[in-house]
Image 1 (cartoon, rainbow, N blue to C red):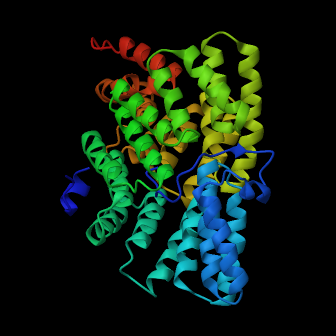
Image 2 (image 1 turned 120 degrees about the vertical axis):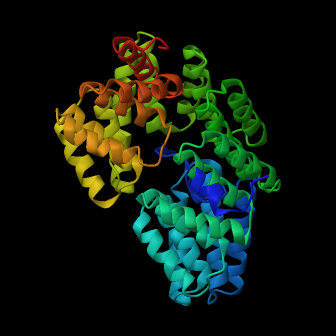
Length: 433
């Protein structure tokens, strides 16, 4: 059982259950006709009921709020986030009818989080609290925004308030992520198990989401078989869950089954084109020696990711791709510097540190990577970067400490960097490499 104490949090996606989704997914048949499918989902049914309410009461905010929530659920169910544009329109209608109505403000904050407008989401959630301060969902939104902005102390305090108000699945998921960010892998798994157990069985997508996050934490801990079982469970509950499918692909990669991972990602790409999956496929094809297919996927990634960057107002994924593939290093540094000016979470700090390092500014890179490590994170990518920077600065013990984490965990996400970490450890004389 997860105790409701601040100490438990501070000893130490994830973003809110309401905002986690798959980036970079585009469908060619995404339109409202899909909502009228004869095999309607629960979100489709909610959309239909909300429209009926609006027909009966077009001058009331309630129907528009219900319609916005239903569209946002539809976006999550289908991994087609064009439905969020319909949600935004419904929220606008609601606020036009009743300015500052509480439910619309909550939905607007949730949508801002989905669109990676974290400062705006925080402002709106605080505005909602002027109406009501005891809603655990709004405390969750505040937690998410503060996490993404890198304000972790405030995030822990907000998450604790959320747990105290109602210790449910969404609260435990935030506890899990905060623990993970602070390097408490076992605690993150414990909290995510609690999230799975308390998830609403009548909401299969959310149950599947919780199992995916548990699988991710198990994967981070090197418990590959247990992680893959969670992804399989998620797919049984919600067969088309994009995050579960990609989790399964990562599990196959971590197990060394590169061809099996390719099959999973290729099958999913044939349904819905994703920038993230394109980047992974490019790396897999490279490892398997198929450079022509790798180039094709890398080109696809750049096209899609530029569109995503404009929508999300974040270039982080493109920056990291360029740095990992030794491309556009000066531009990557410029963009990473710009990102850091508005957002100082550990992952933004890491991107800037790696950009500085790749541009030969190693001492400046150390300052930023130290900032990225400030929570004690065991994130493999951050620790791999830290190890490489410390090695260049001739700090062998610190380099070995962090490269071990990069080598042990990174194979699930980047086999090339895991191999590089092991090579650097050997050069440093680490007998455990």
